[in-house]
Amino acid sequence: MLSVADLHSSYGKIAALKGVSITVGERELVAIVGANGAGKTTLLRALSGVQKITSGSVVFNDVDISAASPRRRVQAGIVQVPEGRQVFAPLSIEDNLRLGAFVRSGAEVEQDLERVYVMFPALAERRRLAAGALSGGQQQMLAIGRALMARPRLLLLDEPSMGLAPKLFREIYAHIETLRRAGTTVLLVDQNARAALAIADRAYVLETGMITLEGTGQELAANEAVREAYLGV
Image 1 (cartoon, rainbow, N blue to C red):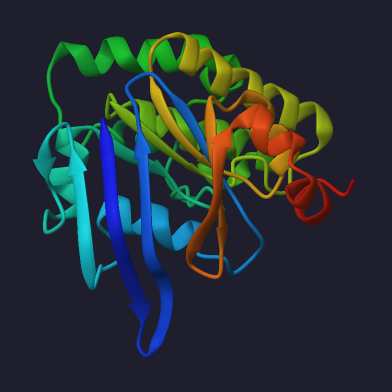
Image 2 (image 1 turned 180 degrees about the vertical axis):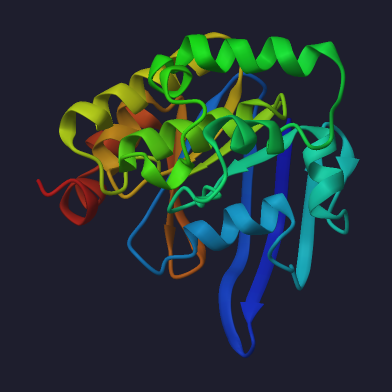
């Protein structure tokens, strides 16, 4: 579904991605693990089109989208749940969700809204409240729900467990696994490497803007270097 080849991206003179190449197959859950500053968020932003790439290619469903706008990528089915949730705090929960469907219209939007409410009952109960009044975990649910309103073919998840209490963390990961079982393709970035690798079909280790290891989630979780660097073992 997704093929990224020799991707480079910089912030001014600082190189953030240095020749990253990854693939994501349809219906796969692929994880990217690495330390803070490794380039994980930059990679997702480059895939969604909000971070400029300096060279390399991004091919999605056999179409080169390297120069496509963020809107065009959403229309193609690439949708990102950003780090830190980034909900529109003054707007209601329902308005936040409807904004996720900005490239769509018609009765399907209403049907998808109800599906999100079924998945996240806490949002349904509070749909008229301002999004800023939600807890961190509820805001993460809202951010995921907003992304689902775009009907993603590839869902980019950036640090979905950040700052969550253990109970909410487990709930969010249960929803991610449910989406994967339902057929949504997922590219997951998370500081909690143990949790990410546990549910990943395949995974990559990103260090200082370069892919240094790849394999199945189980293989990387058992790798001695990964265990020492990211799993605290």
